[in-house]
View 1: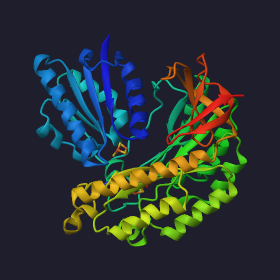
View 2: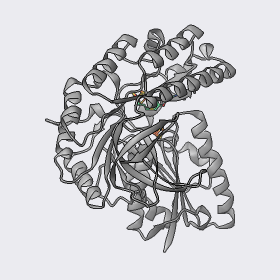
View 3: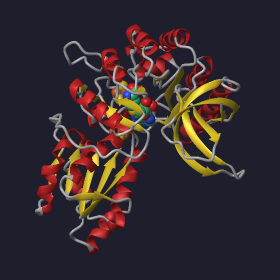
Length: 437
Ligand code: SAH
Ligand code: SF4
Ligand code: F3S
């Protein structure tokens, strides 16, 4: 049996793609290994959201190139978002690569592997969305199954590379999604997370479908399980969707709604289609209608031209909106994007990093404040992991509440996959402590 190792960087969409690649390769006689040195085929599944993520890919693959000198039969595949964006050019940078596989050509993997096994070198990353086939998926062992429902983005925020790496928005066929969800539930998965760059756009290209209808169909499937969906574009969250979340018992009280900046001028320059007060209304609307809802966000520090005052509006927004958690990043110029051309407006590295540090500090405060709200409450937790002995010598299990809070619970048995009721005893910045009731 030949062995394949996949190194995955980036977001859940890439993780989901890796599960699909493993599935397709198993049919060609490859087994999965966690040990790159033992592999006959190495795949790097890359992310290009920031320069740092792209650079990480090049340094990882440089090491593999050295291995190939000693073992010329080793096959190296450059996949993911950097592959989709750079294509042929990667052969010049890394001449030992056998296959460059763009995200939009994922399902061609089996035929392309046959070609590289026969000694060819191939690039496949033209912007032509793949024809999806019903394939095996070798999922990561966990209680949660990632299920992509749409891919791509039509928004073209001025900083973002994603529309160039994942192409235009397109929805997967509902029957394929439902079949995949049914299979995951039959395999014992307890949580289904629907994935997409803009999940609320689901169905715009399908007659009679939208995210609410899809959620209803999945919610109607038998068994006890949870449903989540990420990521939402603020102004695409409809009243119908909020009603659906309220109405459906399996859909969790959790929204990830990236805001990016709390300043109206910066938002405009980012080409986001809302201002602070619009975003605030959306948040308030969700919070009044759905008690205990968790709202998380993403923010960028040091966007070209951002003044100290504009940056402070972001800090203010985080506090005022009581955001439960935010992903943060310093602005990184990306090739082809509009903002990358505003070189004169670039914020110096040290200022960006200083702002990022303040953003992170603010985020920690918001997280702790959010977690404290739940001390003393009883909550349903889905156990994800048996952690083993903690620093105080006690066995600990961890899980999540419906509203996506991580809870640590002292317990001696591995009950991964079970739903339990927990009393929250203490709040930390990144998690809650609780006891089984
Ligand atoms: N579709 C989602 C986000 C996808 S990208 C949305 O619309 O919000 C994930 C996050 O990466 C973004 O929310 C943004 O905060 C961050 N990001 C994207 N491009 C970036 C860049 N050039 N520099 C720094 N952060 C970036
Ligand atoms: Fe990127 Fe904007 Fe699309 Fe999100 S909505 S993926 S940030 S272009
Ligand atoms: Fe990165 Fe591509 Fe996801 S750029 S964040 S892996 S869509």
